[in-house]
Amino acid sequence: MPYDRNDVRRAYDRIADEYLAERNEDDDSEDLALLEEFYMHLPEDARVLDAGCGAGRPIAQLLAGDVDLVGIDFSREQIGRARKNVPEGRFCQADMTELGFRDGTFDGICAYHSIIHVPSGNHPDVAREFRRLLRPGGHLLLTIGSEAWEGSNDDWLGTGVEMHWSIPSPDESERILEESGFEIRWRHTVNDEMGGTATFVLARRTESEETK
Image: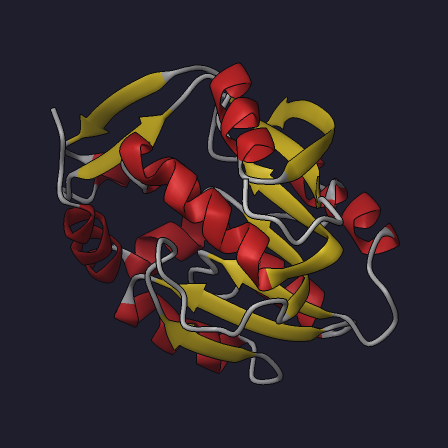
């Protein structure tokens, strides 16, 4: 069933502390190891967007020591915690489908476990926004999910709060990125610290300024 993405925002507002406790991963977890190759593609003094930054741990916290870090999240409660947890970063509440930054603002974008909560019909909008915000040749590290699934859990993390997911297949997610002007560099599936697996892609913004 289709859902209002504001339901996701309200849910994350309500479970901000519980989610942080679950997602505050060890630095040697498999998905965090993928950041190393992302770093390799960044220039010195890079500006990076953490899209769906949550409470700032662990991704924003890891990035902020080495890059000019900007974090956005749909949830006001998550952003408030991110500002406290990662004081060296800059954070604002925003919708991934329509971000208010200028074209070519960022050298890199990472989006861990975030676009999977955006209704699938809006995934092309997010991909186009990410491409617009990246400089030519900039890189995107994105969680896309391991298989197609649309659904919800009415007691996620034992909180009594309903959460929604909208996940295209990995092949469909790659097609959306390619049609939005990205070149896929690799796809990896790793163990998720919260259970199961998570699939990530590293994609490069094409050099052409033409909109695809």
